[in-house]
Image (cartoon, rainbow, N blue to C red; front, side, top):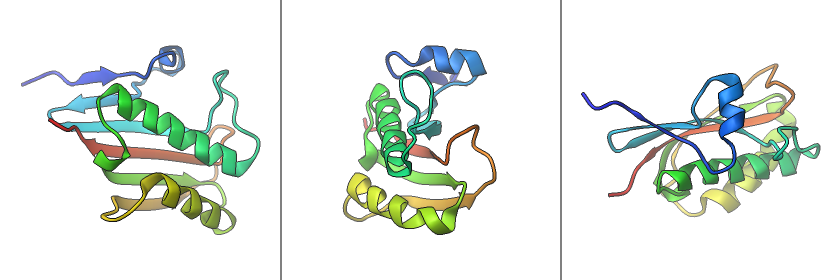
Length: 130
């Protein structure tokens, strides 16, 4: 059995080492990306919700790129929201810009009460192109 490979975007390994997880794991032709939040380089959250969502997508793109993928390779997405009812319109607008045209990936949105100081998190599974 092949051992999975840990994937890290450039410059962010320290964050993952502090908390003891990988940004993503490559297993065969699949990439399992850990939840990405709208964190600045210093680890603090973007204070404006829309900017936090945009930064989370940018962080997701960086992890995907480190594995040779992009958003078009994503097949499954889970998002976590601290206040889904008031946040969903913003998330949908940013998602439309980021994901683009159909076919869309599977998508599950989950309301949560805590995201370590953040209000939005996105995790994904992508198929790695050959």
